[in-house]
Image (cartoon, rainbow, N blue to C red; front, side, top):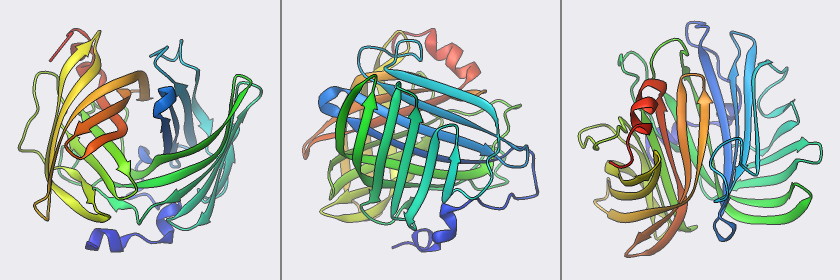
Length: 317
């Protein structure tokens, strides 16, 4: 286990003190899951700005029948909600409730919006969260970010239909200075799960239409036979788009043990997700075909608004 893994403590489930008291100090706590056989995905994404006294909440459920908030199975985005009282380990606002049951391991996530959507889920980490740190463009500060693969069990009621959840899901946390009044760089996060012991996750900046820079820092990990190692190199290319939506991908990663994975991805759904005012993202449920088998997971491609305008003007890479 690396030093970065060991640096995480139970305190990292809580809100962090801001560095320098900047107004744009931001914390996020994303929970998601996918049901590949239904081509259905869910994202729960609160974003907190304690120094401004506000937060936001995004909850989206979509499948292959719709790709925008207007035609998704469920979509709700709230901005400038008053910052809730209390800590992230026991938090409740706007129908969302987070409870930490076991630090860095087990969480209860509930969400209620009348008859439209009800979530009652428990997330249990497969192993310790994995820290990925990258540099902001100025190089002045490291972004703190971790990811964790989890078993997700519970119930979902969507538009009157109730079904049980027993799936592999993901959560992540980040805390850093994140201004809305400056252009944002592009980035991507993609992951896939074949089983509890065969998984990958790649986090990389500079995900621009037209190519894939090889010489950029990457974060993430490769898990093979239950053994996790940090990535030292990784490329992700979108090789086919439809109306701007990424549809097919090529992925290649190498970890610090020298192990490699190559995969060809096929998106089975897409969702247009405005994560914050200057950031637009495509969230996609992806089947990643490799020599080891089919990994199910996601590709999350985020752009600054200026880059989005350019990306949407293209039909392919």
